[in-house]
Length: 224
Image (cartoon, rainbow, N blue to C red; front, side):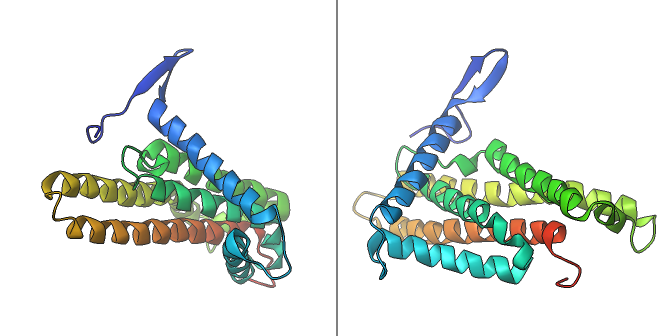
């Protein structure tokens, strides 16, 4: 059991890398790819097994995309589904003994949040041009300051919310495992089940907030 907050780092080309986070991130991506392969290797008209599970997630997320971003946001479905699956697996990975969630590292959550915000502004400029820039100055030009502060706050709050919840859950599990006798596992099992639920909820919240931000860039004026 590693110490809480202590991370193994490596130096390369003058940069410092969190080795544990990198390894856990690659493991997470491998698991997501494995799930995708299992779900699509033998497609059936009436889905079963992994195909049934993944199709249910994809259909549900497509419904959320249509409701949040409208028809213009459907091309973002692969990104949204991939983001949700990565977050879900990542959040749950740290519940396995001797492993840690990539999302318990602020570098990961902030990186994902910045990716979403960069996509928001990039797509906004591409799809709406000057109209997208103009909305920062509404209802009056002085509001550009408030809107700028809001845009800076978005990735920060998005990153810290996910990071804080996942890290806190893993810390409490470690503490419970150290405090509870081996013959008294019920509290640990209850908290583990609760952490699984929280991991799913946090993946859902991050994805839904990302879609809400992206909707500002891709949703047409008629749909707004």
